[in-house]
Image 1 (cartoon, one colour):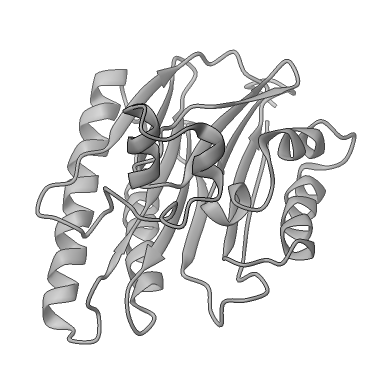
Image 2 (spheres, rainbow, N blue to C red):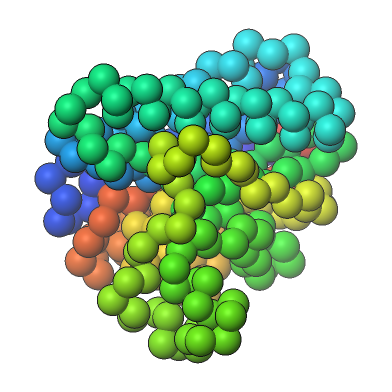
Length: 247
């Protein structure tokens, strides 16, 4: 099992508000996290870093996450703590109006795989060469698509495609959407919308199926985004499972 993560500011933004990590705990379980921050005066990077650091530190020091129910409770409790921390930071820093972050994560043990998300950062699995999206974007446009008021094609270039309906730090309560996913997959991919807004699923899938190292896959995806303009920060966390759990 191999993993690699990387974040890049892109070609347009003056700084990077994304945060990303992959943590392996004492029991060999994996937690992948990507957060895409937002807010004034570089507050976005504070929110995303707070989320990733909080979850990563807590997970790394655990002997084991436990059962699937234990994991779900642990994730909900920690996300609630992060949300309160972001709200408190915004209240005590006048230049942090609108402070918040998206969050997407994947928790892998020998027995189960859980995806969780808030906002529009995405989680995918690669299986039999095909990339499948596991998360649902919490955006105004996606809500309009689901209600039948907008087609998928119309949504792609909609002027309000980045308007979030849900984010950490946006309200007093913010619950993580969780998905229980089959562990029989070849890879797990998390990313900020800096990747999915620049490359199609098919283009990402093509790179992940190339006979190159996992590090080069991630770097190549970021290069492709920047070659197309790099209009946003780009963050990717990828775990390759083809080589098996024990490797």
